[in-house]
Amino acid sequence: MIKDNVEIKLEKIDELLDKSTFEYIFAENITLEKTIDNLISNINLFSFLKPSSNDSFDTITTWKLDAYQAPIIGYKTDNEKLKLVSGLFTFHKVCRLQEQSNQLVPCLILPNRPSPDLRRLIFLNDIVRLLFKQYFNASGPLISELLIGLFKGEQPVIDSTEWRTLFPAIKTKTELCKWLKISTKVIKL
Image (cartoon, rainbow, N blue to C red; front, side, top):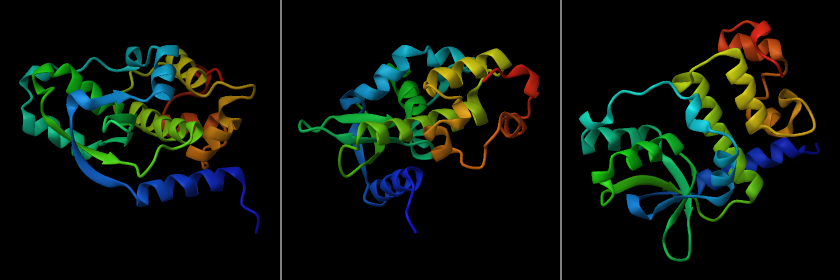
């Protein structure tokens, strides 16, 4: 049986995760990977978030729990810096807690630098699942804007290779709206 591109990409991501290690990295040594930084720059990702509570009440222990539950995933550079490819919201919280910058953050380290398309897939998986399941300030136009911004292409979002790789069971706008528990009338894809 010949594997399609979707299966090959998923296998590569699975292999990366199987070979990853768990390490503590100083928060000040974590930066966004270029592909991810460019994607975030092109859309105002944080504008899609629900207003959050005041993080100033968090302790080192509670933000470390966040880091274990929604880990920062990245690869190391030659100078031992970590380039983040997933865990943006955890990273964002660590950055907001400025007094934590000299703290060690638990991170999942990939064995090597993934290709740009795999880095993008890992990031998209993190962002889309978390936004839609936990943090998203949902309205139809905002959902449409976000998905079109994240899954740019010449074809509809749901027909894109990236979407089919990450969400193979969601093949239509109706299935997407059912997953999000919203009306199909509010989404323009």
